[in-house]
Image (tube, rainbow, N blue to C red; front, side, top):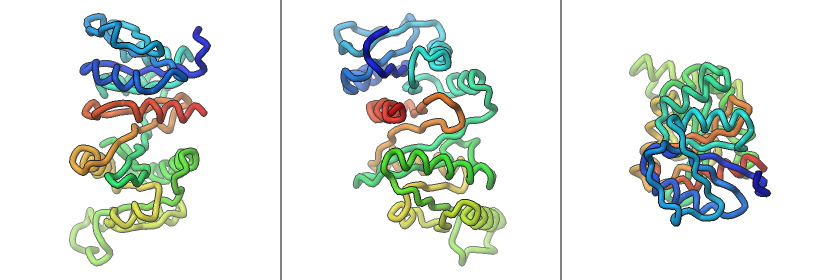
Length: 255
């Protein structure tokens, strides 16, 4: 075992160079273990001294098993396929669903937490209340405002125009009362100014907010920690330009 105190695993499914470049930038205080298949071509001379390569026919399975066994202190999905990796994580942690909250940054440097960010997450009032409770702990650790904003599908003047809008607004009002948060209607631009935690109406809209900000709006995604397991796992998008922020986020959760 190395003398380094932190060992973080990251997966390589494709675009190996992007992952390696990210691992190289994190620094010598953390050892980065990159999990990939035997077919993955990586030049040894491209690796910094703190980066190690582990090859396996099913790298997502080994990444998760090493995390559970404590061989690594935290894991980042990197460019491994989402379905297989998250399915392995759920199975290994004995949970039937995952609760993730994304750390995002606007183009002008405003950081906030966003949930739900998975299309199958955060659809019920109790789920949103739990996301806020756990999100406040993450916000506290990162020095982000713990005030939470609840978004809905319209403004109060839109009530009666569509039943789904009415339902989302009623749910948002209830979540706000139960959690001590504030219902900002559909005004995300105002919510981000006042709050460090943004709760989207559902997983679909949350995913769209994330993708619009990071891929069209010039913002940045720092990764999405999984909240309902007792290990540190940071989910990422394979479309991310790099994984430096996600690795640093995983490391900060170890402090």
